[in-house]
Image (cartoon, rainbow, N blue to C red; front, side):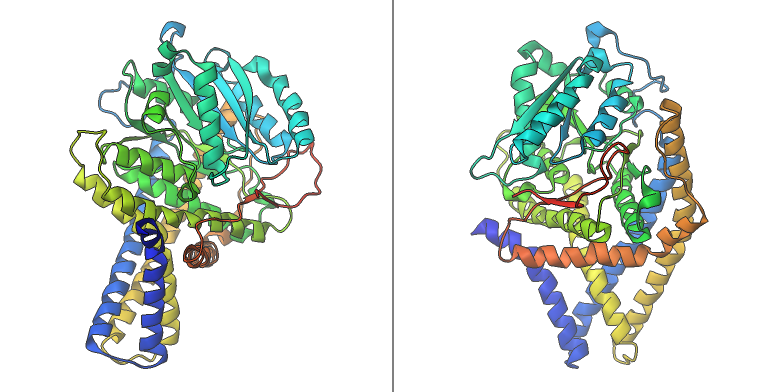
Length: 510
């Protein structure tokens, strides 16, 4: 019952806000307490929206200067990425979860990793497949993937079986793959020197990603630490509709905005020591772990009572925009899956008050407050802003006590739009630097060119935020009233040039 009440708290709050706005503006029910309540919520939401925009702009400015440098640490010398001696080397367990991905997409990732100087000495690649995929396809792809085996220290394929009680998705697949790797690849004396990396099936990582992590860890083992990296969509944007490009740019911005504080939630790609993953009990497989990256971050955060060490690695991870047919619809399903992560609000509420007998460290109250704000910003703010934007459109003739507040919040939205132009300049500079790093590593890399037409991306920000943020946010929260399970649809990434072009852009993991 407690879990259910925690799960439905966000949708109940959203429904209550919508009903109060309808009562006030559609039916003309005006009371001082109602005006004060709605005015307070509106001002609070718009202040947070402006704060997010300012923080995102600062983060983009910071990222532009930090990309390619060592992680922030006063103990580190100037960054000179050199391979760690073999006797002291960390081993990197790279887990790549996949479901019905095109073989060419995975081979591109493997060839990119195989070109790293550390690969044959330190990289253990785990290709995490699903038993739900057709066996003939799995066997065929496995035979292709094993052709890259010689590029790495080890390359294995795991097949996640259907397990009763598990919620199907990336988290349960990663959990199975990590446990298999821990038990089969590493002896007890090796585990303190193993770092687990989790990334999407299309993610291209640079050597500086691994150099930065090793340089930061040094000789210290058993650290409760999580590494996060910025992501950039820079490979197939030319073939992607502007609205989808705008949504993905916002997703990149949302991830980067967390890099301005000591609490850095990961987006898609992250790393942590194997010893720490074992301490927290690996990845969860329950329904509230659908947002696997953020959920694992929450699990680690609460395990350490807010004392989690979060380190940004300024080495951008290259990703692709959604591809295939019906890209706009596929991107909506991806957004719905992202916003389904609001179920983590219930998980977090439960963890706030759960006893932490395993840890004797004091609670980091400041980190708890930052986390509470991040949860509000990610899962409640987009819906509240959408509600008040609609209210502003239909209440222009308001002359009551709310009139000054509606005017003030309208001005704040206009100021946010103006900030977009500054952010646009910084984002283009950041994009150019990230692409330059990737081309320096591999001059033959596929890179999406930018032009004056990409101004559409920024002009469409408000629309993309509504279509791929607010709408799926409401959709997910309404569904949470009746279920914690999602019909998990994987939005496929574009096929490699050698692959056939006829395919649906959505596959259902059921």
